[in-house]
Image (cartoon, rainbow, N blue to C red):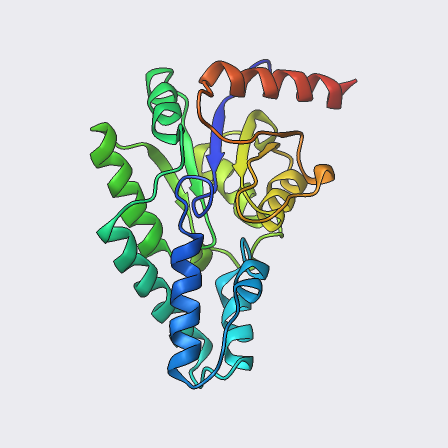
Length: 227
């Protein structure tokens, strides 16, 4: 194994800045049942599994089954994304470079598959060709992030060893998932912090980042891990 073979991307907060959309959906849903939902409560859920989030919303007064909460939140977020896709800086340019280098990419998200597919279609429309060769979504796993299952499935779906991949994440839960799975993990914190012991490197954004930058991070840290 002498080179990076694939890139694994989180979605919310990494490819798109959709966390404000999620917080809007959460607040509206809780308030519709007469409760209150703070910004701090919303940030505490960033990167976690949807059913975990749904259980906390239920505790806040949302009188629905967990599956119903998950789908209501997801549909509200999807509506907002369809109105305006909040791309993160540099992400489209990096995907263009990965396509040109023929490096396979997987989307590894705790959002529902329908939301992930919608995002994949939006990116395909932006770049004129499909970007993701695999999607692992929240309804595809038994254990949500920070469990490593999602990233292990992402690498397996691409037919590569997890240790030959670079993963990009914006949240503590997501970074812990990728890191524990064995991917070289780059943290790009946005709305919440990421512990340094859950990533190999921390970037402020993807703006100006290239395939060579990803490959350099992979080589540097695989060499260190092997020594």
